[in-house]
Image (cartoon, rainbow, N blue to C red; front, side):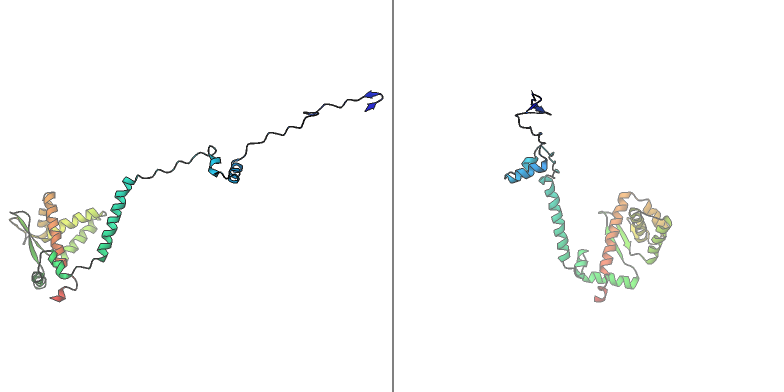
Amino acid sequence: MTNSGKETKMPTEIGKFKRGQEPQAAPKAPPSIGEKVVADFLAGSPAKASLAGEIPAVTPTPEVPQAETEPLVKREAELEAQLKKAEKAPEMTYEQKVKEHGLTLPEAMDIVNAMFDNNYYEREYKLTSRYSVLFRTRVTTDQDRILRQIEELNLQYPASIAQLLAKYNLAASIQKYKQLDFSDKAFDVRLKFVLSLPETILRLLAQKLAEFDQLVMDVLDDGAIENF
């Protein structure tokens, strides 16, 4: 095209584009993780392949070695079996109970008669080949004395209460120890003697007294006395 006899040239460059060249597309942003997952899924590839290197791998929680867990599992199974066995086991008969203490039914009847006739029962226990101890059943006064002492001392811990029970029950029940006779001694005298004992001897005597108490309790079991 001419204007006033002059030829006007068309510009060969407009903006950043040159004539005769296709405009260049803007660079594409890298695909997002979601896009890569979809693309891999459509292509039949596992989605986790696209995530490799994009998301840090999660460190699995370490598992307890099987060698360490097996003893625990085995012990738990043994305890459960013992509990089930105890639940299914029939209750011991009266004859079986007294037999556990080395008694026959006539001997058990003698203990019951002694309690009703004399209001007490005595039994001797061997400590060694040379020494023994003689116990007598306690009365209500002995129990009241312990309760008052617990209240006065305001004992809070079970161990402290158990220790006081052992000492006071032993002092109340002991009648003879070796060649010493306490049958006519006051409780305070007996308690003073018990507190002077070595700890090992005190534990031994307390254990024997516990056996004595359990024997009397089993022989005088509720519902058993009426069988005599």
